[in-house]
Image (cartoon, rainbow, N blue to C red; front, side, top):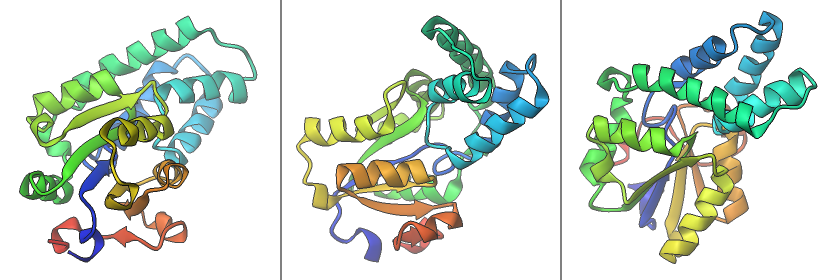
Length: 210
């Protein structure tokens, strides 16, 4: 398996890599913010599409502080995030949304690598989804927001004393690429051909790799 020959650790993004959840997350933002002007919500959707790896907490702050140019309290951010989470848990515990190519690879290879999930999605929500879909057992850890992905990766590398030369992050967004670069680990793009501009390492189909 060319892309993974010298790797012992795989860090996985979740949305768009393990689960085709981005359309549902987009719908979630639209529902939570339905009382606001459509044009402003559309602007957030455009930002969300380009920055899939950023957390909902960041995106709600961005909506108010950058798009609406107004302050928002942390309490209000948490309220919006909780409303968003309720919608996600109602919609994402669905095996049909799993990306079979990556899930099959994980199931075949979880004993060959130390696998972790590092996601922009809410960590507590993500663990619940993975446990409900019987995926949690394949990963050494499952972590997400509100901690920023850059910090999640940094802490994971430090806590496990991993050799950075043996770690790769598989993601579908520029935020995943940035988290890799900031932490000095390899990045492999997946499920987003726009990443070919950023990275020389791109996999079209994981099932072809092993």
